[in-house]
Image (cartoon, rainbow, N blue to C red):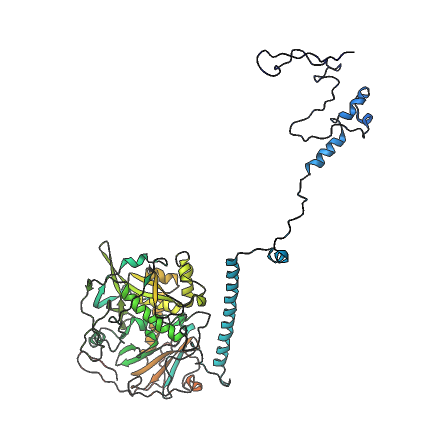
Length: 593
């Protein structure tokens, strides 16, 4: 018996079998199928998974369509119901890694680090929790001091114990309180003045702003220099020879300076105590300030929630920071100028340089400053004249712009939570928002002064300490310019409300008799008080004797408790002394004694 290997086809065109075999390998099935006979074959697709080759455990006769061919049923899975179920089970089959997890490399400590966290993120969360705890403690301290100040029966309560609860002037026993006005009354006032005002006179000279400082940044900082020969002169209203001359010429009814007016305009934002001396001479009203007044100083973190250290020896105490901020502001305003001798002069020279008038200070050299004496109309017969300061001038494409220069100072990032050297370039808005929260009154006063002076630009410098524990050396990190009106809208400073406050105080004071009065911001409450003081008050030979705390808040019996003259239309304040000695000299000088 031989073995038939069949016919091997020959491909004359190349390698491999031909496209169509000339002779089939084996004879076809009797059924007429196309696949070779005697070879079990199941239809399949190349995308299907390979399954079983043969299964002798199933019942082949039940599913066999042709019983004669049942011997090949072990190889035929085309009509098998189990194959469909198996395919359905295989569709949900997923290969998983059954290997055990790797063993820890560092022993039992590994289980504490199962939730890794970036160190910087963890530090920020800890710092945020610490700041929240400090805010809560500061809030409790404020409530505690407020309770002590409002409770007269509390034993040992001292309203002047904290930095923000000390009066700017000692209330004397002979002073008489005429009225007290809450700040809630100020917020409802509104008055519009004609804009722009009238410029009566411009004195002094201005130097040009150095535009190099616009490119200063924390990576390219400038050291703050010291100017010993350029000291700022803060002259009050009645010591100004120009204002005396304008008063003698009957140019207005009310006279003041931009610093005094800004303190009044932004009074609802103030926390620390301040005072303004009011002198009524004839039909004229002079708004003055005392020597070494708080109006000339720049408080730091006045409206912040976190209290500053109360120790006077601490460099971060309120008094130390106020002196430091005032000095920084003077230095900055003179450093950012082009000191090449090129100046812009005005109608008259600086009235406070080399003056021979005994009432005006004498200074050999004055910094770049121009005084604009401007007049506003309050009503039919009432005009107000104010001396306004401009610090520099800028010439861009032949167009001159006046500007004011002021500086914010950073003393320790731990108190504010914002490091200027890291955030000033990337998050400038966050830095400004923090300053608006901590120094709302100071920024509002600077904006009001820029609006009063008619400045086109107000420059804000960001000055920081070289080291947090060094209060004598500073660097300029950045200088940013703003338009006063746009910045006022940004900080929600309403000009109509500002003039409404001034108009109400002027109307109240014009109802008083001739004499001297003091407007004092209450050190612990959001209100101001008006006191009638002797004519020689705040003079060199005047001896001050502080009034006891329990007597400072007593209102005269003629006045009702909490009654404000701002809302009493047409009613004069009763009991005002009128026998006040007033000396009016002829000529160009008007002096109130």
